[in-house]
Image 1 (cartoon, rainbow, N blue to C red):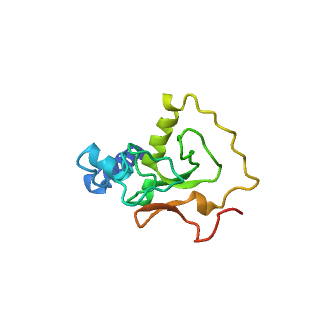
Image 2 (cartoon, rainbow, N blue to C red):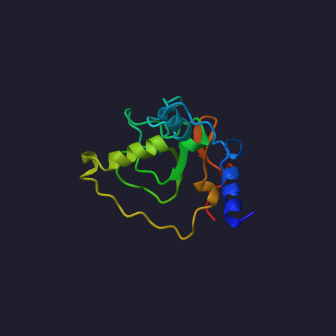
Image 3 (cartoon, helix red, strand yellow):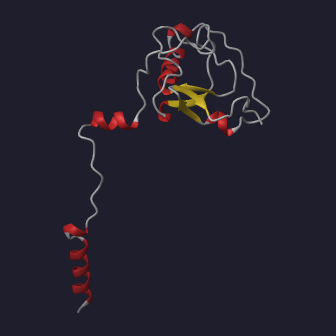
Length: 152
């Protein structure tokens, strides 16, 4: 058999329908695909009294209400009074929905006149557990153990 015939035979075999690997079934619609991979955009309704550490007026999504780990992140939070200034460098659990909402709020005219103080840079990095947000009993939390401040 010649080289050309061998190459054609290999190509023909590798392109046979039974040799192809079928991709996983895709969701029926793009909206279903988004629902499977993204956290809720509007957040979830408040189910418990508001946490006083978070800026959360009525129009804001609940900063901590979640369904899955993918709904939660850990990042700095803003002052609870006006929601315009980052108040400390320690990461806190929060939902993606609230994080996006408060970011938009900080860029709005509501914060144009805010006089934010510089935030001190910590001497040590926070423990990894503070940066690993998860959804536990419907509330965003960190992976730190109870009583662990998360500081090295």
